[in-house]
Length: 240
Image 1 (spheres, rainbow, N blue to C red):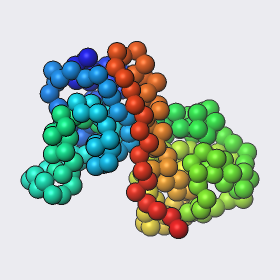
Image 2 (image 1 turned 90 degrees about the vertical axis):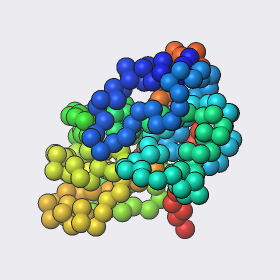
Image 3 (image 1 turned 60 degrees about the vertical axis):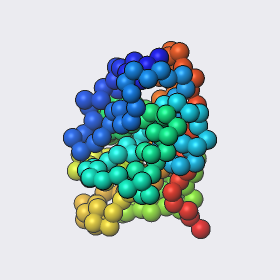
Image 4 (image 1 turned 45 degrees about the vertical axis):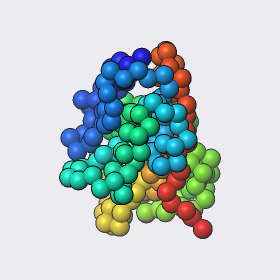
């Protein structure tokens, strides 16, 4: 299959026009007419993944490698160093970021990972009623995301409703109707605002909540005549 044909398939299952205006999803590197036999799926891309993957392969990642304004290509610095490495190996790159969050990832994590059925669902948010103690919530988050430590705002001893946004979703707290909001990358000022509004928030981690991207996308590529490799990405943070 050509890179363009794979892109068109991805566009049908998760339209790239759904991405946010600040996002940079789509074909980031490669010839549209290039023949692709292998796709490597990962949350992110790094030097080790590039070197260990086949030459001429296509990487499909969640987080765009080229993000924001790229004004120079210093090949000794990120992201130009990785771009040069992929060019040398004849590899291509597609990012599926906020469009895939909207159509697939958030719903998958809510349903398949947390085992919940949404009563209310909108772009980036799933919500439902629950009846959990604080310890029951922690146990579910340990099982789902591997969390051992919990950063919480305004914790409650009893939780009757919960909302989820994978990745970094604190900016959407005003849209949350549930009393407990699960998301990652909660900043200090977000926490102060949530506390003042009586909204319980639990930081479930960015990598921890989005690391399921490759397995979700792999399900959507089974009909294609290419080999698909799932490559778990590394958490950039070490906890000790």
